[in-house]
Length: 183
Image 1: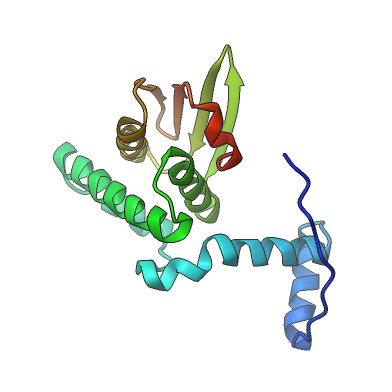
Image 2: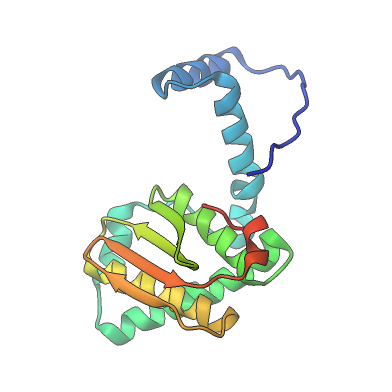
């Protein structure tokens, strides 16, 4: 991963806000500087678009209930709607609509949602592991959504493995997307 350039700046911060940032940094066993950078990066990469995209914070339990409602056709339709939303969101947030930009935005959604995700290379293939701990229908939803992404942008079909809490995707990603997408 390339080293990012930094600059030193000075801002006035409400004392109570600063005290909470320091307290949270101590709880996470990190520096307030690193935490402030993480907060600002999340705002720049994700939070500032929420209003324009019409997204709201949503309880995980309610999402699980929505995913677990209905039959397989309902779940496929839900994944299809999520894919259409994702493509619109990629244009707004990334000013581009290619595989790298789409995977970069998905990575942000996963991270913000507190879902574990890992990416490794093995034998010339890319392995993406999404661990959601939300049940088997969520695995199907994730598979359907990722299938739509890879179908739109790749010629090679990915291979999926699923458990009740994990989706593993094996696929060959073009090297060009690594500048945008690295978990």
